[in-house]
Length: 474
Image 1 (tube, rainbow, N blue to C red):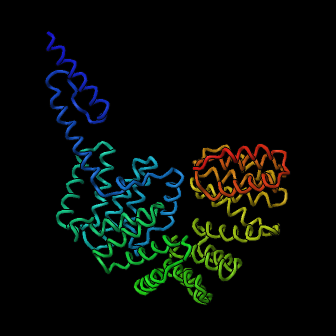
Image 2: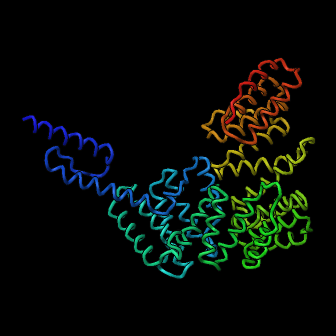
Image 3: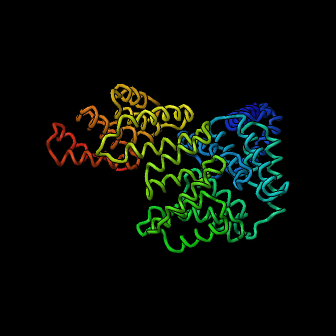
């Protein structure tokens, strides 16, 4: 009798374990000897998960980013468009599918993963190849999450077949196609810039001659050196020159190369205007080079010509939301370019109406645009009430931790300069400084608090001194 009770206890414990760790596995959890089948099924499930975790795909690349950033990246990828001439189209669809999964969609991920399969076949002119390893890995993970384990195992088998049929040139390395896609994914979601450079470098060393890899590698080197004290090294600029020669139709890259040359003192105005003509003739896309070209215009020609260029692009394609976004960026430069002069009232109406439209077109990724709108409202005649309302909406919204410093810092300055509420402005600078997230806005608020402390004129001076003395660094 005692032995039977022990067996019953063990079977019950095993059943509870399986229900906790494999709640959707449809295991037979009988508490007698028949539970052996369920135990085998649980072991098979564990084996499946371990195989999935060993895959190289978006689900295993540590792309766990905030909802706010996911929305931004989704909208940015949508704005690239679906031009078949884009060699990264398969990678784009793969990333869009993963982002839709992370945002909670049940249908869109598979749609985009399937589009990625089709895009790779068209671009590579082959039904299969090593470029599908990541794509099939994504599909294996997706079907696992959807509870279709048979389909998941089928894609695992396809991955295994591809890896055996198309082994990496180096046994100790991933396949170059996998490195290139991993680099593209990390680059697009703001991953480690040095890691992006390294992955592209490894792909190129094993499989040289693919121009989009060389171009992306040169861009990655440029981005990784962007905040270097010594600036862009000569060898990186030379790599950009070579990549430009190899990929002359890549206008996005051409604009960045032009910018780097301008930073070294070259006169590039005529070339910039020639590029503008080509960009205007190209299909609308965030890869067309328009936005970086507008920045070149702003730095080396004039903000007014940048506005004219953006408005001309929008006139040619009046329904394109990306172009409306570009136009609002130019007006922002114009309005806030000189902090010592107030913009003329007759130039505020157009930016306000466009910003309101852009916010409606990008409902999930317009946080910064909403702040810009509040700031412009505050500069418009009789616009303080609208600015107050917009700031209150933002302050009461469900904010990501990374967004709070920007909002609180901007609102603090609004309270000081427009509302002349110095004490409340200080309160919001304190709120900004308290956020344990390193950012430009946190540093700026701390500087403002230190200025008030050093002046010693404010009634809150003692409180500011204590606050800064006890402030924790992130």
